[in-house]
Image (cartoon, rainbow, N blue to C red):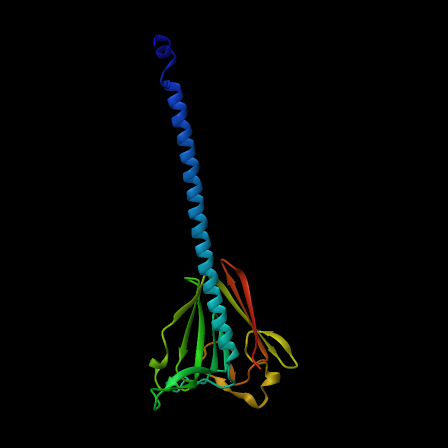
Length: 226
């Protein structure tokens, strides 16, 4: 009995400290691994959200460009007409048609199409690309203009080029005088500056739109209009 009692002993203080230190180390490593996984999950979620936003924005822009119409836009208030495709600084606008709408009918409505004026504007202060539209190409009142809706965030610059028959690519979307022909109209005298605008219903063969973004770099969209 005495020999068995002498051979039986508990853990020492040093062993207890070593065990606690080992447990603490394992706990810290587990916490770091869990934190890393949570950060990775948040990063993947943010990337997925940005990718979804970019996909929606590019699809919307492409749909508008593919629906472009060679028709002038007549703002309310007897303002001067606007070209079918027009750019002023960080704003570009185009006349579009073919978007489906529901019109009153015998069975509660039938699908039809409407001609609208779509405007995109880059707000450099917030880095947001905004979209709004006029309900018609000849709106009678200013309230026919919809509120601006954010389309894409993190945008730092917007650039456009257009491709014209027998000329090629030119910066901007204004039709060169060489291709205006009978489509040429009087100058737009509501514009300020030394060079008044010459508006036209002519459309280029293609448009190249480049968006500089913070998360995806430069995004270039090329759309044929004819």
